[in-house]
Length: 473
Image (cartoon, rainbow, N blue to C red):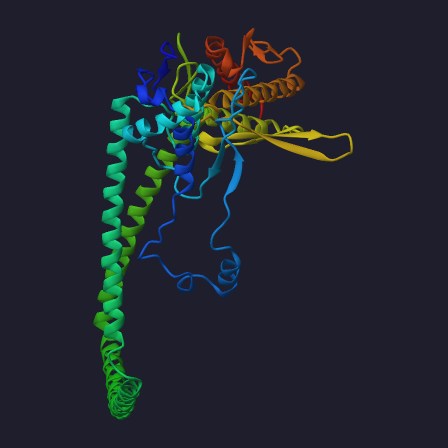
């Protein structure tokens, strides 16, 4: 047993066991086992009463529960498995309901005292049984705690500091809760300062004051309504006088001299307005003519979808697509491709029975329809985007992206078949075959080949844009 080496469960450093731990006798093992059984549950002084926060049904169910559950007994880890053991030891371990974060300490003096009866009885564990017993002790400690045993001295010190910090924090929370409870009790005492009779009297006084205030406001309302009626009568008189004054002004304006002067001014203003409008219409006409010429010479599809291809990557509307490009930029580029294909399909009046494109920017996807044998039709959503987070599921996410990219390539192949109905001799710059375009795999997991296949795909889409702008209305 002197050559038996143990490793710290936290830092993986070799651990040297104390001699007292290596020479445990059955009495000390029994003490370790019984230490977990003899812990009593200490009721906290500030424990809440279940009647204060449980409903009636839950309180009845709570009262039916046994107050002290009987421990469950199971076979001890210390049962010897040696076939050659002559003593036939069999220890039993009782599983406690108390906290699992506990530690067992064997006093050296007690160890010396307990060694004597063992020597008198002539009982000593075999080497294999002692090793197995120590391993079982460490297994019990590891199963009942969040750490692996045995521990080195440094790891044990760190663990004690951590538990001390948690204990101090719990004490602070306890103090805060007690202070808050004290404030609640003081507030409850302040609210109960008045007796029921005083409260009723206080309410009656408030009610009488409210009635008096209501009567006062009613009288004030009547008075103000009377004043409002008087003001309305005054307003009607003023409006009548205003109409009379306006009629007199109109009669004066109908004078002969004023009519001639007004007519001359109106004619001059009208002529100036018409000349100004004529010049404006001429300028607007020229602007519209120039705008029409510009529109006739421009390609609306090229303006909406700017496709560029260089030595490294292909771009659509400024978004690159290919291997080693950040996923948000790739997702945006795929969203632009889905939008472009949607426009091409509508322009060609192409009806897809197995696919449906759903352009949603950086989260665009394809809906694939499949006819089953029983006549029903199922659909599956193929996402054309991926998350930028590095997780274990990212590899599976890329596999889903491969399926979506293959479906996207199949839709381009269907568009090519529709174009051949317009021109039978038409051929795309790069041939599409299964999951490849121009001999390069469209799968995202193909890495560098995927970059080249994306360049081939955007080249074909740019070619299709040029074709439909020239051969369709």
